[in-house]
Amino acid sequence: MTFDSVFGQRAIAALAALLVSPLLASAQRRPPEPTPRVMVATFASGDKELGMQAAEALRARITRDADARRLVVIPRADINNTLTASGYSTTESLAPNDARALAVLLRADEYIEGTVTRTPTGVRVEPRLILSRDQQLQQPLPAAEGANVGQAAAAISRSYQEAREQLPNERNCYTLLRDGKNSEAILMARSALTRYANGTIAMVCMANAFKAMEQTDSVLAVSERITAIDSRNIPALRLLAEIYQAQNNTPKSLEVLTRLMAADPGNERLREQVIASLVQSGQAKVAVPVVEEALRLNPGDPSMLNTAWRVYLAANETEKVIATGAQLIRADTAAADTSYYIRTSAAASALDGARAAQIASEGLAKFPNNASLLLVQANALSKAGQNAQALAAVNRAIAANPAVEGGYAQKALIFGAMNQPDSVLAVIRAGSTRGVDKVTLAQVALKTGSDAYKAGNVSKNRADLQRAVQFLLLSDQLNGSADAKFLAGASAFLIGQSAVSEAQDTKSCTLARLAKESFTTAQENVPAGLASYSEAAQQLLTAIPQFTPAVDDQIRRFCR
Image 1 (cartoon, rainbow, N blue to C red):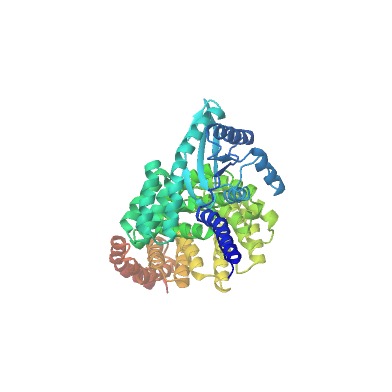
Image 2 (cartoon, one colour; image 1 turned 135 degrees about the vertical axis):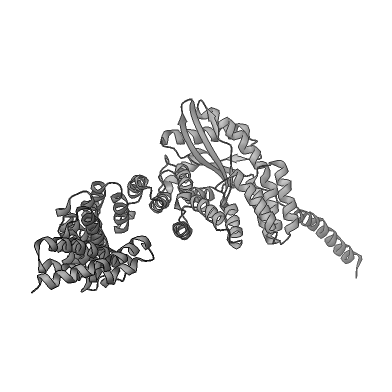
């Protein structure tokens, strides 16, 4: 090998070392973190102009207060251009999912949204910081009031930048959590909280780390701390719900699930679960203040209106059912289905029959042959005293669907309201031969017979009492009932007592035989009331035999 060749190799090697060393050093250095970007969304408000003004004032204030090398505020023009290109309004607040989608499109790491309202002294803004990577990671910022949006924006800008101090170590917490380093993640979250003590975003990471370590008591403590700061924090509420359900703590579980439903109104599966649980437990009223707060925070949101409407139904808050239902079908016309009109009208009928009938009529304008809706209308009209119209509606319902649930029972009740007992009896008997639910028909017959018994007991009118016996025995025939038997026996006793007394004066064989038959009916049926009507039944059973000799004597003397 020649000197030149050796030198050449050494020179090349040296040159390579010179070239490679800087590249290796560069590869070992991390690229600088991109400057965080924040988007300020239009605030929700009853006054669109105010919502836009509040958002723009906050953008301007954060731009003024923040170091541009540490935080970029996305300009209004970029937001509006993206909204316009996507077919959205530039003057209205966005739904939660749409706000996050916009933030992602604009490459915002975080965004601020909230509500703004006018006050007697100016404005009140309730803002919320949300991370774009997960819209459930949120930090409520202190509400700010001022004479104008500029003053409120100054306070929000300060509190926002203070809240951001938790974010760097919160990101490190999640990195450690993903790597299974749970203890280190907890320490990192605690470090974040030394920078911002009320950091709900950092606390959620801490709670998840405790959960991964199966430290339930710590999860519970951290989650309760989060919800004390932010009552609608979805991750914390979910953790609490899991814990309370595992502990079979039904009251606490229902309370948390209700709050979770209000915080996450778009979760239909959760909404169904919570409403069903509340209704079954008889605690629907627990949900009322929660959904009202959620409505205040989500004005006009169709999902939240639907949730509130259903909670009001379960809680028997009739006025709120009607008012919220009207808002719901304006916000979402698809919600105005047969179920909406049936349930709203049925609820309203407990308060105002005429109002309920009007709601049913609105539904029938869209669904003219819906038998269930016609039946609801018939019930409402009857309660409003419009029985002729109610009868026409129930006949239409039965014609549209002869098997419509409650059709014959409703028709019988309408005839009862019209004081046509023979027609009531005919309808019940007709229904019983046509596959109609006999239990329901029996209840109608029991009510009719009971009413007749009460009237006859006061008036001593045998016709009323005989009608009572007829309906009560029919009720018992359709669906055996101790109440129906006892009341039939009591009515029959009063008939016998009246007949035997009158027969003595008139020497009537017919009345004597009526008395005999009536006391026999009483003897057969009164014993059914010994459990529920003990004292009255005992008195009747003692009295019946005392009339037997007199009745037998009358038959012997008057029936020749």
